[in-house]
Image (cartoon, rainbow, N blue to C red; front, side):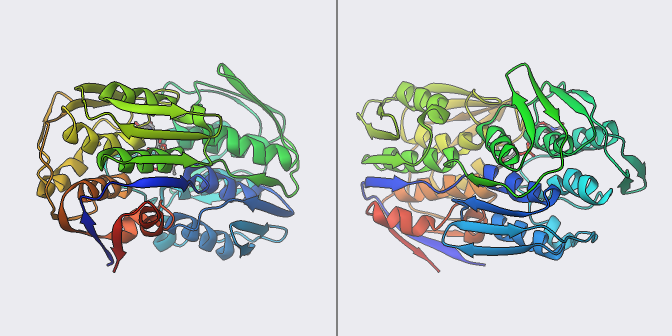
Length: 407
Ligand code: EPU
């Protein structure tokens, strides 16, 4: 287990260029399974989850070469293999194997899927989609010689089930219509890749329409990571400094920018950058995390330390209704909170240096933010959990003036 040691209490200043989005890169990588060709995927973050995804692709016979942040993925000759539970249980995105494997090999096995364990994470919608395309389930195996297009109407907006459905529809026989779908920016990023590989997909708020095709290799640049962007903006704010993030579509940050403005930050959003600094006056704010374009659930653990440093706040997460476990890991930093009726109330708190363990990816970054704000030396254990989704955070934070060591 690795740790991050932080000497906090320093104001952070400067500019960070965010990496490619984890949650866009992962579906694109898994969707190469349904293509027969060589794909070029640019701006792929070198993070733990992506490394696991590459190992899964290689175990199916793909050749994956990384040069800088560009991956070349050759999926011309793949063979079916039961996924290694060690690999699939390491990342949530292994659920995309259900659709991709069924589509390419006519077979998939429902095996353990991993990812952050902050909540129950059911896969019933993914399974419903595989069966709607013609899959037949026997025990934990689903098979189908050729998927057929279908109509799907989801009653809950699920990023993962929407992605799996698009992956299956892209090379299924005939037309698929998906309604009640999620609209996160990473879904459009996946569509961009599949279209470059020959897919016929139209996306609107009302429905996604897909005409199945044989797909060749594609070429795409992964969008910038909006959650990483929000995390570094929060690092600037919580330390009382001024941080600019670049490399991310500013419109993806609208809900976050609105929330931190209400909290008291000055936010300057330009065409391709956002700059924040604290005005030193804080307001109590209420944040409701919900599917895009609302405030993202993945940024609620990031805004909680800002609430504590400011005038307090209230969080209501409608996506992962119990995603508050990370708050207990922030109490060594003096953060005080209470939970009631599905709400988390974060009290105004004097943050002190402390030692804790990362509970999950965003919870780990939340602890790192507390440590950056507090005077003195803090330690966060389980640093690899943070590195699953953040590319070289210690280097990016050091470039802003933080004293951070990865041990
Ligand atoms: N849901 C079901 N049944 C399903 C699938 C989802 O009921 O079969 C429910 C979930 O319980 C949840 C809601 O639908 O209440 C939304 O879940 P979703 O399927 O959208 O989440 P996911 O695809 O498993 C992705 C991200 C998460 C992010 C969520 C929500 C990836 C690899 N993961 O998860 O990212 O929190 O969407 O935006 O893309 C993170 O990056 O830290 C992270 C956890």
